[in-house]
Image 1 (spheres, chains in turn brown, orange):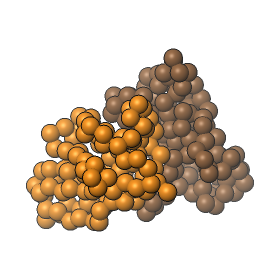
Image 2 (cartoon, one colour):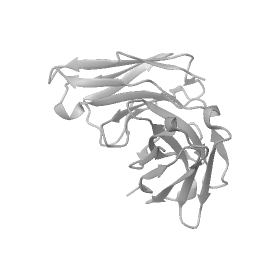
Image 3 (tube, helix red, strand yellow):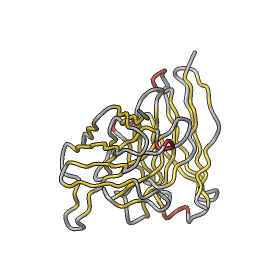
Length: 113
Length: 122
């Protein structure tokens, strides 16, 4: 199974500041013929289902604010929130869909400092 | 709009079975895979398996092999997830989520149901 390792486990950032969450896969999740990384980022708030933010490592889902961005290559990926808003308080998960079982990182809890 | 509507909360005794439904609307049911993911209290997200609503083929996570069965009813655009031999550790919120089209087995989950709480307790 591909292990997804997220860091940090929790993060406190001031409103308007940048938040950065990291995710590392235990093996490549790049499908070379398509030049796509099979990685997604989800936002999870209590009592709500996960919400897709980013897919193919860097493609923002329609309707997701542009302060959210994804980057990375190889086995190292990053979710960046450029200017933290109060409504961004949540747990963020990375997930690989390169192979089964699909696997998630353990999550990063984002709070306001 | 695309929606996945799940069945209501369940309380089961250890050893029993639970069957959760997920009714799709707003898109062509047979054209997209459906994944099942669960979240135990205080824990992260765990992928359980996937079903192709077109032919009914399934792939399960090894952890759940032999205990989970995913089926579909194309006449009602509904997918089912049945989990047997329940134990306390199966207490969780169970989500269905839409995956890729029939050509895209390896795909992200773009629309999620609201979740079904399953509590296993004697």
